[in-house]
Image (cartoon, rainbow, N blue to C red; front, side, top):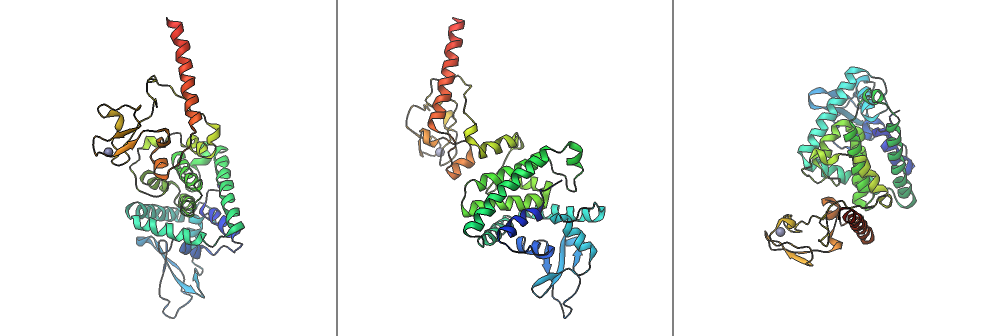
Length: 340
Ligand SMILES: [Zn+2]
């Protein structure tokens, strides 16, 4: 079983809207306008069969009564069926074609930021049709979907995972879900659209989404992320969902500091303040020696990571921080007595 498919992500939306899910070509056109399906002139032949153009990675189709007409082209329906997740058979030629489309599209998304911006607008626009209870039901269904996919994957052995139609590396799968949940948890119009876009792209592009995960932060702003930063991402995902289940602890020895173990960066130029000459975290503000910006050195300015800082998200209470320090002081105290 592999529920992590584009068609399933979209069915959550159409169920919430109580609307019939459009046919394959229309579905791709609505959510990825101009990227996979291209409208061609009918030239009087309104029932011209849809045709896949190999060298352009695009399906040419005519509109017939407002919808794209696929005709009886087996090739087109086999390709779209594989992308969306409705066709199961492993017919190598179509699978290969679908994977070329994935590669090509991922390439566009990492080289042309405007395409990503356009997709964000498209998704936001679509989601604006969901109001009140429908939107609530949709939002909840995303979490159920994510949970289902995680549990399903946990239950698969290596053979199952590698023999999927479009196998995904753990790192990519988890990276997509982490970004999606990170955005969903912020519960703004933009962030929910971003979260949904991660699920859409993750299920459509499958392992090719890895290129996006490495290039973009969760809000699709380009970053330079080290591969190693995505380690143990499933643990980070649970941390986003259940921060109360995690307690801070401190292992260091610089207990003479006011905020042991905390690295300070200039809010203006991002210079590392701890390294600057004369830096002392007992002061309540520090003038950056690089740019002169006056940085506040207070508990309220401590964030888990750069993205939380940008979004103004705090996950730790002051009590948690102080408890971790007390615990460390107690540990040190007992060790100190032993050695003296
Ligand atoms: Zn600075």
